[in-house]
Image (cartoon, rainbow, N blue to C red; front, side):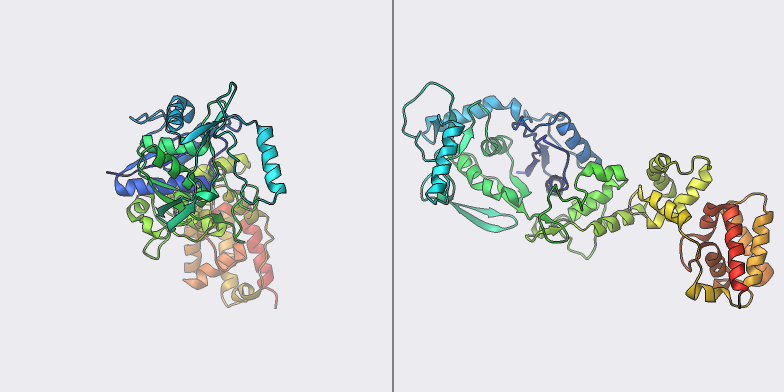
Amino acid sequence: MKPRVRYAPSPTGHLHIGNARTALFNYLFAKKKGGSFIIRIEDTDMARNIEEGTQSQLAQLAWLGIDWDESIDKEGARGPYRQLERLDIYKEYGEKLLDAGRAYKCYCTEEELAEERRQQKARGETRLHYSRKCLHGPERDGPYAIRFLVFQDAEYTFFDMIKGEVTFKSEDVGDFVIMKQKGIPTYNFACAVDDALMEITHVLRGEDHITNTPRQLMILDELGFDRPVYGHMPLIVNMEGKKLSKRDESIIQFIEQYRALGFLPEAMFNFIALLGWSPAADEEIFSRDELVERFDEDRLASAPATFDTGKLHYVNNRHMKRLSREEVLALCRPFLEEAGIGKEKDEAWLESLVAVFHDRLSYGKEIVRHYEEFFSAPFVIEGEALDFLRQDGVKELLVSLREKIHQADTLDAKTLKTLIKETGKETNMKGKMLFMPVRIAVSGSMKGPDLPEMMNLLGRETLLERLETTLGKIRMP
């Protein structure tokens, strides 16, 4: 049987980096094995649901390049795919457990349960399990929850794809609620029933869910369903090794925020895939199709995955370098327009701007910072750069170029390239002795982006000012 895996978000917020990783690994596993990837909406926590939560999640997954085979917008044979549309199903299976004596009605109020826990704590008990006082009590009128009757002195063992063999003892799990008083299933009950009825074969999820697994196994076993194969992925931690928290403001954590900054979806897909998985070869930059081809669940890591923002920027930069100049300009244009940059410039100038910073960009919006630093940074020539300019022939070279720039009818990158070459011929300077003095004289640096493009970006007035300043420096003894 081909694998069927699922990503089951709650519409209580936007797509977090950790949830995106869960979806992505399930997607890669399904595609590599020729199976199906299902998205199930677990919306029974109505108090926390937000109106746009579901559509936001789906939109960001689609932007990342993660598509699905079945969901609320792609109905299959095992729907519905919203839990609130499956309440009759949960009711049916809850009653089956009641009839079989594997569950019982609990009439306790929240106040009674809170008082029971208070007394347990006062007695120094460490396992705050329900006392079972309703287990053998009489039927009563009024609202009730349904509790699962946990076996005593039993063990539940399963093979975890990542952690290996894992065992839980029933004594660590009290009789837990499977149906609330208002007929709403609890997470573990709905999850187990849905996984069974949707024929989910493998469950890849974060290790914070591992304590839910014994409860789900109990339900599956008692209802006579097959168990899926579980795999619990390690936590994502920050650079200090602390669990990634949504309150950690040092890291941007929601996919739509990266999208708004001009990160590339293929780069985000690539980076997230490396959070807890490593390829066999010593490589890091992959397309989505390459990741599908190379994915191997046996290479999922058991150690925490470090969210390294520097590595994310590196991965995105590498993907941006694969883009054409036109593609980079299209990515950066909204940020330039928002910042009011280039409003009075033509398309050629904008293309030069992109060309100058293309290789340095880690994400689209970063072009605004590069632009501001480029035009506002003080023009300084010192040290090795200044020494280089004081070589024989440099002064004549720069004087000639200054005059050509001054006299040119129009300036663009192509014209500037021609003027530099003509200056070299006139002054008998070539190679490094031609291009390095010009670069230093207009930028103050001995390295940088394409020289004619950079000069075009500066414009005639700034070029002439900088050449004059430079000539003043090299006239000094």
